[in-house]
Image (cartoon, rainbow over all chains, first blue to last red; front, top):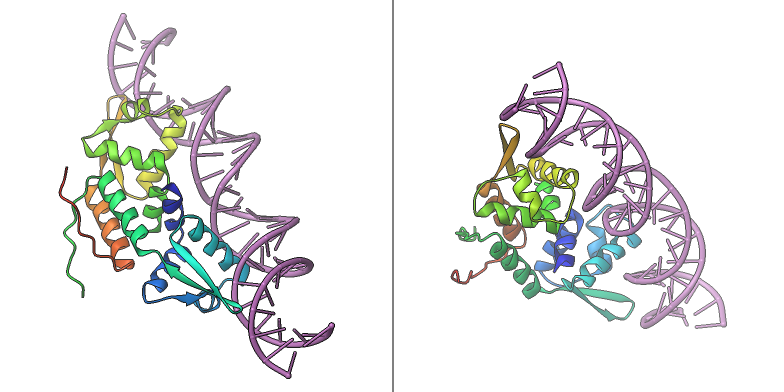
Length: 93
Length: 93
DNA sequence: GTTATATTTAGCCATCTGTCTAATTAGTTA
DNA sequence: TAACTAATTAGACAGATGGCTAAATATAAC
């Protein structure tokens, strides 16, 4: 679970996860959203994969990444429970 | 806000916050709960202070640390909202 | 089979991080 | 003032992190 927190500690990786909330995206599509080289992005994908937060499915020459929503939720719940916080979440805007 | 995420990415610091949920504690009291030297702990306190997650009040020779609960809640809500997660928090056990 | 495209791996580098020991600061007590 | 205690600051160091370029891999298209 510590891998998850490490993964979440970088803004680029948080944005990747955010982008994947709206649907699967290829490495290239994700890369376009950032000012980093492909290898740099690839490393971020690896960190997220190691934490099991995303999964990559190869099809043709490209790799489509998918968010593991339940693990993300689990991580959030685990954090909340560690801090014994009870949040009243505002309704979606 | 990035300082907050960085602060949360270390297990020692998460445990410090957890311990402070049950009430204020001095640097020394907190230090006893970890296998680290006082200077190491002091650095962790600094990181948490820089992120505004805790506040230290000096009294006599010791410093009493207090958790900033509302900032912690804010950080959690901000994370949840970034990921557009809606958690159904289980009731406290 | 060669070329083009998408992505990763390898290797390098500067900076950040978490730890330590030693030294310093500040308050209390004798 | 001197000694003691609580905590921090200074400085060093190994290892992790996030970025890059260059090279490798794998699939597709010609």
